[in-house]
Length: 227
Image 1 (tube, one colour):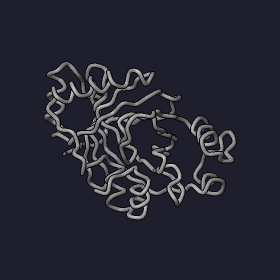
Image 2: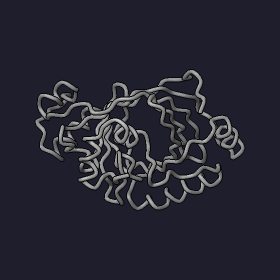
Image 3: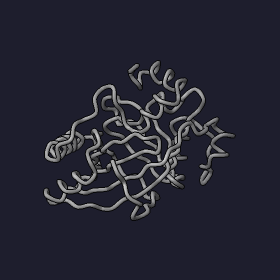
């Protein structure tokens, strides 16, 4: 995949967005994807670049529960399960997203009893009060598209892994199935293939390549498959 210099920046400071329903696919050629999306009435939204840093305890307290705490550039996000089927590496098919340092801190305190007060979500305090430290960090260049209300994100991570993510936000678990059907239809129309069982998104691939101890812990917890 060939990416050009990013065309825009992005802020991630919005309140909780509800439930993210997402599927990941093998990355198509960027020019071919852009052409096909345009033919179907969609549009290209340009490119962005961001850095994701993921945090957890040494024994994977969060990830072993399929909870994923990250800082995207300067903004905090927490993905938590909705209760539907498990996936891996933060790539479960649907997650509830909590955004913003204050809301993320409240959720961590509610779920795990961490001694976090308002506006205390920063790497230093996470380490001192919760034993939470970074375990993965990488940059992503993302080409963004929109088609019939769905977001299509073509990603290339700094460690060489590419993936296409098709996403739709919904406001209740009852709408997850409908969103999944919409995503599948769009994928069919643009001609992309889903990731196989041995393939994963950016974070899962990073863990499998570079974090053998974390991989072992998450396999034991049933979050990741052995291969």
